[in-house]
Image 1 (tube, rainbow over the protein chains, first blue to last red):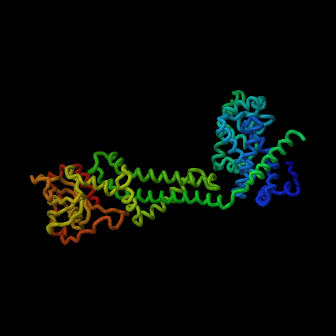
Image 2: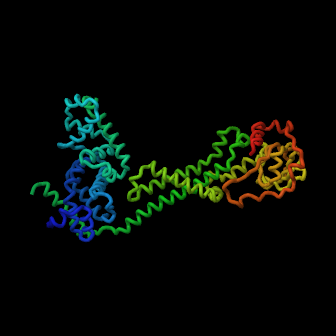
Image 3: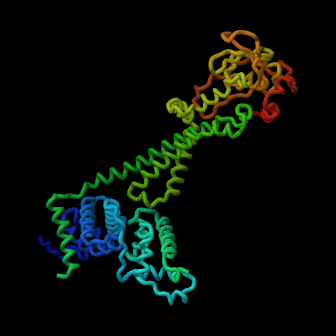
Length: 197
Length: 294
């Protein structure tokens, strides 16, 4: 089946407006899928779902779940946070069911995280000489616990605010701060000594 | 069409086809509303039960007289282990945990941290528990629930057992008759046994307590009279008599004070006591307690 998109119906409308429309006409849901699937596919990859087929299956399940539970969407939250939460929970269920370990893959990313780690280190002149490779960062991220990796991914790769992270991970904002603080320290400890010293 | 576009169309189509073919419809809003209220209700109920546990805790704390611990227990630590309301504090903690779990499952419950929810639940339980204790609920709960768990005895029953030990010099019960000169009185202990109490060694504070009647605690010595165990009454030499005022309990849980006509002015109570009393443990401590106004 080929779905015809009508930009006037969806492209300019807010997420919340499309949610309202979907409740009257299920076809409107396609606009939401189109709007978020690329971002969420990337997010799944960053969470460590290595295979494309697995990411597609998880995303499909997440969208179906979102559709079924559309009436539970709380308009006081951002729709994107709600969608990220569903995808995150689906990914965690996937890892549990498959007894799979997330595979951290960093492409041309991680600059924000590296900058953040450097900013917190006293001797920046020394650090300027230190270049951290993607490989080293990936290796260090792999050693972190899932909750630390989740926090770092959302903050530095998905650019989510603390409030959005709180809604996605379903923890208080204070816990998000603590989680990020500890995650950064754990990551710095896991990095090569030339970077972290 | 590049790969990315292909994937986009692919997922959107797969999802939409699935929704269409399976005739999926969003679950009705009322299901989520009810679920949300259900968890709030469970959370509130847990806090309410916590408040009941709290009122029972207050009742126990108010009615366990630590000042007489030296008479009833060998060490304060053993008294603390026996008297502290661990069961009720544990119950309170359990209900706060249940409350926390349920509140966390409400729509925005995850936004509240454990300390905030725990503090809120504890303060609510304390406030409600204080009110319930003030209107006598603590004692009722202790009495009603106390008989059922095998590991727990209501505070009343527990203390009665401590004061039903004449061989240790501890006797508790109801004053049912007092001699006009206050030299002796009759006491019915918690098992229903009658005791003739010799009050010749008692001082004014003790005599006032006897004259008021009601439930009292007597510290003294059993008197060997040579009668058989099946005798209708036994004798006891009293050295100290302390009132037993239950606080926050059911009003009908204790008998009304005895209408005693005797007056302490009828007898010139001695300030010094016989050697018989001076040998009891812990004489000086009990005397200090009595002198400080029990």
